[in-house]
Amino acid sequence: MSIAQTQDALVDKSGNTVSLQTPIKLHIGGREKRDGWYILDSLDSAAVDFVAECSDLSLFPDGSCKAVYCSHVLEHLSHNGELIKTLRGIRRVLQPSGKLMISVPDLDVLCRFFIRPDLDFKQRSFVMWMMFGGQIDPYDFHKTGLNFEILMQNLAAAGFYGASKVKSFGLFTDSSEKTFLGEPISLNVVATA
Image (tube, rainbow, N blue to C red; front, side, top):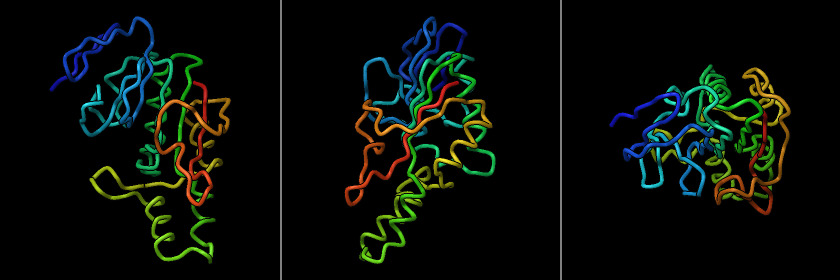
């Protein structure tokens, strides 16, 4: 299945034309349909509009997105070049002053949980799963760990600015809202292109 591309429009996996006259909102790795959002994912499903790798956004023209949202996606990218390449690709497809909303497992929080002496084996194993991925398919492996400092360095290197933490995005029911033992496990950040 091929996806046609012009500066003004894309054709999604179902053959529908997606106008780029007005920049779109792109949800990378999404599972939940929401009006006004287009979903890109490596694995096809009924909710997905574009089947592609987030590390290759070449089907999207420069500045074709006004917002990009990715929840629990970036940790699946290698810290040996793949993460920064992807962030630069996202920066390219965002219009000037476009927003990138990121949620990742907060490695600082997960490390604190992992060394807590009061956790039993099952709880500690669940923390390990959150650190390294569920490993249920070839894409469900975590290749990097991110905390605020590491994420900020990568965002700055990719050309983003004004990054700040937020408690919640309030957009989708996803892992950005996940808690463990009453504590949020995600680092939620908004950055500007």
